[in-house]
Amino acid sequence: MKRALVLALAVTAAGITYAAIKYNPADTEQWTPDPPVISAIAGEPPSDAVVLFDGSSLEAWTTRDGDAPEWLISDNNLEVVPGSGDLLSKQAFCDLQLHLEWKAPTSDPNATGQQRSNSGVFLQDRYEVQILDSYQNQTYVNGQAGAVYKQTPPLVNAMLPPESWQSYDIIFTAPRFEGDTLTKPAHVTVLHNGVLIQNHTEILGNTVFIGQPSYSAHNCAPIRLQDHRNTLYYRNIWARPL
Ligand code: MG
Image 1 (cartoon, protein in one colour):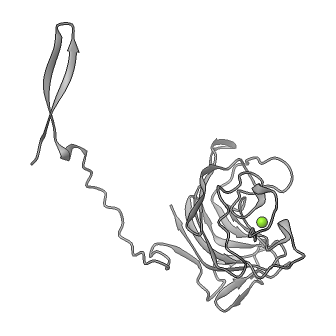
Image 2 (cartoon, helix red, strand yellow):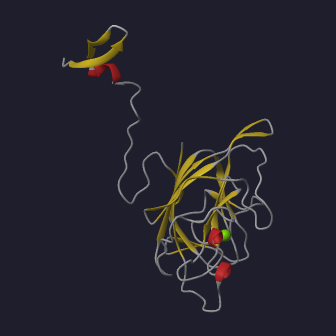
């Protein structure tokens, strides 16, 4: 076993002395517990992911009223049906990693700002990471794609043009409550098309359209996809509870 010999300098009242200290590399090695072994093939959900949409069914989703969603599956993609309501995952999540891909259709030239292919992914049914066609589309910056809605703009605008598939990879740490009291706010990290756009951003509370964000205590809750009465497409949605 290798040992490193280090001379440490010590200053005492009697003057400078040298002491030999032995360090063992094994002192700082941790051998257990073993991280679980998973399979992670690029472009596919990891083996420990909860697959929420793989192109085949909406079995993992429901509506606010608990009905079967009316959103369409076409060409293995999930299409927002404007006016049919939001989609909520049947499973509730706390801390999680979430992957989803989305595509805005060719822009309606008359649709501007928040009306251009607006949707959104709400973490725990409350905290929206905005989805919008923000390609050459001006709006308030904390409402563009990748914003924590009405709170924090993305670090950069990583949008691709309409008709391009785009990805969000989201790491979400849920807020902590003791009784009704917030003890730790939520945080979110987002990569848009592989680019960091939210870096452990503190979430200030529910992402509301009007007024200031605030927290109210809650438990684990569904992922919600927004029907903002605009057409948008999703595919490859999976989550890993953390
Ligand atoms: Mg939205």
